[in-house]
Amino acid sequence: MTYQVLARKWRPRTFDAIVGQDHVVRALTHALTTQRLHHAWLFTGTRGVGKTTLSRLLAKSLNCHSGITASPCNQCPACLEIDAGNFVDYIELDAASNRGVDEMTQLLEQAVYAPSSGRFKVYMIDEVHMLTGHAFNAMLKTLEEPPEHVKFILATTDPQKIPVTVLSRCLQFNLKQMTPEAIVSYLDEVLASENIKYDPPALRMLARAAAGSMRDALSLADQGIGYGAGALTVQAMQDMLGTLDDHFLISLVKALGAGDAGAVVAVADDMASRGISYTTALADLADLLSTIAIEQQVPGALPEEDPRQQEITQLAQELEANLLQLFYSVAVHSRQELSLAPDAYAGFVMACLRMLALAPQGSQKPASADAAPASDAAKPVIKPPATKPEPELAPEYTLETMTAERWPQFVRSLPLSGAMGELARQSEWLGRQENTIRLRMGVATLGETTASQRLSEVLSKAFKQQVRLSFEYADTGAATVHALDEAHQARLQQQAEQAVAQDAFVNTLIQEFDGQVVEGSIQPVTDQESLTNQPD
Image 1 (cartoon, rainbow, N blue to C red):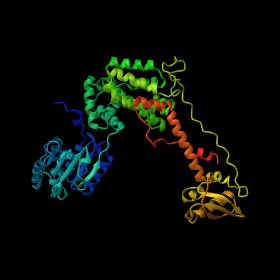
Image 2: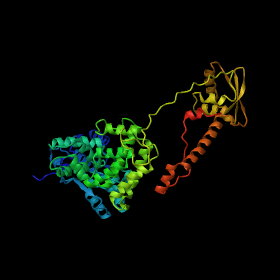
Image 3: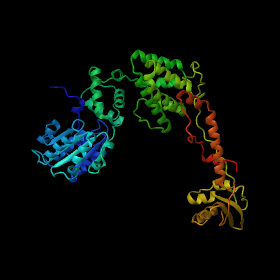
Image 4: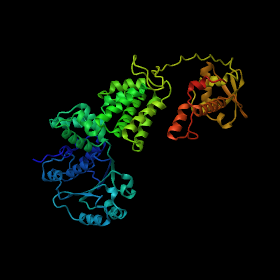
């Protein structure tokens, strides 16, 4: 028998076998079960995610001899002929090569005739966005009110190019890209059924290379099996894809983190001896750096079954966040510039050395406790563990000791929000008469809302006695919380702009990448503590 490639052999023949598209499968099976059938469906998504497969399953479900069902029998002539691609009432049209109005007119003229052997005539138009404007116009009326025996299934990788008049006449389903975990799980099932030996890390390499396409994953698996003489091995996948081993890449990141230029150059030399693509290496390096950064910001995000988990977790704890961002940025930009380098080796080495040259002083770590000093000028240090400052005890506020000077700090200590909080922030303390607090407001409407009642309740609780509020309306000065915060923010903004202008790292980036600081993009780092502890 002729060998059948995995992508065709393992094309799902039931809805239950569809991987990663549960939201679409659920909607279609419910529609089939309840007989609520639309006349036109639109499947969108990138290549190899199941658009054609779902179309054929839908055609089988509509024409199965057992009746309209979400579970076609796969044994009747209709099911077998659709799987084989020779069912006369299921027509697949490639719009890329049949995109004109003449082809569309011919299709619509044939649609009016009753099915030859099936229950429905099903027209599947692939890459429908390639149709011309006249072709779309020709099909609009039929697409809206087709004959009872006709169903349309449209598929596209670019729904943005489809006229809204067509979109409004279809039920649209957006198919997701396959996750690496889903691809690995499915390949594991396929290869086990095919009795093909494989290395588990090779499946993860293959899943990343497939970029969300299950068909590409199966095709690459076929290619890898041939490359590995009947087995899917890590070495075969590395040689075939021109990629670096994960541990190889991690060693490179460790060398960069340690500021060890010698180790970085040694990695590049080893890559040259293996014939590895430097363009692919920079892409893999950027992918690894992004994974480390995500693990750093969202601990536990990396799946437990990932073989790199321990090393990535360690790197996420040791490398500075700004260093990861720098390395990632240089890797991405250097990949684009690699074609401009004298040769790929020089471009890769200079990209890595640029990472070391731009690294801020003291942001890197030593490779080991007894390692030789790094050949780069940076002084490696391990990132100190984050510590929280001990909270200071808030002063005790009483109604009797309250003054205009203490009022702003007291307001910041209260649990205030919304209009009530804005009311307190824009008020000045004038004094008190027994249990009545006198405040000055610059805007009359603020004191006339229900927020004043809520504020009096909060103040009563804070002062541990019933108090009332009395407002006077006049211009307020610099003693309100609002005015103090604005002044403090202005000082921080000025300091931030001065710091950026004097920062050696920023100036180096501007010189190296011919960049510029975008006006208005500098934002000072503030937190509640800085506002609470600012001088009044």
